[in-house]
Length: 454
Image 1 (cartoon, rainbow, N blue to C red):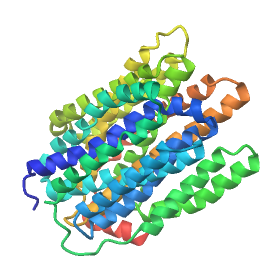
Image 2 (tube, rainbow, N blue to C red):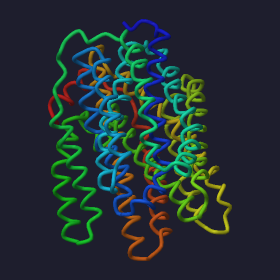
Image 3 (spheres, helix red, strand yellow):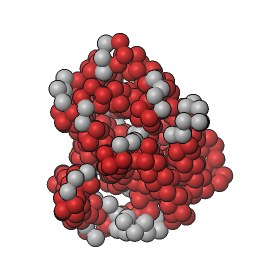
């Protein structure tokens, strides 16, 4: 039975999320500036997709490792890989090299939250988890304030490269503090977790081929890429998730599927909010950063609102309301593209979207963690994080392919952004519809599903 969480562990978990959040908020703000410098709009979406494809591998490797050893060991390794990715991106001479650096960053950044959730499941009693998850969500708040503003200032004063390189000293400071904070979390009682590295690589490779096919100029490459990628991706994903995840079957499968839809809907829009504000509306990069800041602020507020409401109204209603608000925010972003609409409307529109994901994220995660037996937290974490990362990668990647194709064919960026924002809203509507299927499966069912490969 987990003991009450210690202060040092809480600090370690919050710092771990803070490091990942600071990178995410800073890079998202300056990517339009990077694209203007390095060019190659076709790879713009890949700078996000590569990050999350790398994260797919990081999630599975780190979660499996945390079910075999003390969690601080995979955390320390992930921080080193994360720092290496920052270095590659900071010195990148082309957009392609930047994409490779982002993949390394994703490998490390995907591992860090995955191990954090393992620590929550293993060391935090169930009644305390909503509050601890809210603290972890709140860890985005300071990076959301400082990240966009500081990144915009750095990009305009000394260059966008220092947005990446400037994070290296923070890795050197935060890394040891995180490791010390989570050393109290023990290794599992046995070493029964399956080694799923091959499956993780297959998921990442298959998703990458699908995204490459979607961005291909020739129709036959489009069909071949989607077909071949799906053949590799789908069976590997099914082996790493509970039975019925792709069908959103009632219980844990629908919970895992909802995490995927949540990431896909939110980040497909979120990745292009700064682009819409900066490139289409001609505002300064700091305005795009402020839109992301507003969304992160409302996300944090909503994460604490759900702590007070989850016991009275339950996770299903919170998830349904959250998805619905994300749909509203996504559709309102379409209005921001109109020249007659004040550009600051983006802050209101995406603030609504942020409040929505804040209401839904923790209840979905808590529902999934409730299904984990002691020592098997990594398996559930793998499923949740894998669905999340895959959803984000596909959401941002497909949006990037649509934006690039429509921009090339029409000579304008607006049509692609309209399609992207409307699609994000439609996915959120689907998530709201499936919310009634959420629930925790019995641990025995979870283990059978993950081990059998369906």
